[in-house]
Image 1 (tube, rainbow, N blue to C red):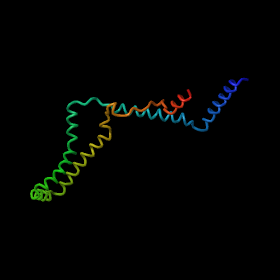
Image 2: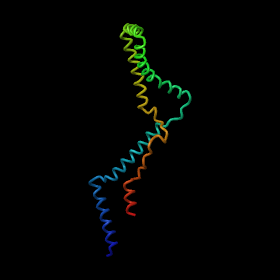
Image 3: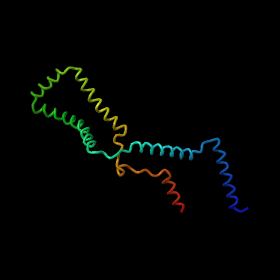
Length: 157
């Protein structure tokens, strides 16, 4: 019997042992490949669900309006400090006027602001801004590509 014949026989025995051992234990490589395939399928399905049509002029206009409240509120807070320094008497009169606002009205204002920002954040969380240009995100390597394996194979010649 030649060396090649012994090699084939040994390989056949090894494959048989591997098949028998898979009855008792999970083949981790195959399990990981199946998990990766399920993950890729779920990712593709989720990506298909969030495909959006290009936005029209009205949608872009409303999106622009939706971006205004936070900067306006931030600039208004800074403006209050500037107003307090430039006209302290007028500022104190207006702050005393705020003291006459009934408490339920403050609660209503807080609820409106909270629900506005909460709904806006939830909308973004659910994928409102799911449309990202292809060049803006990294492109993952294909599921079958393994950089370490490719490097090892190229080093072996």
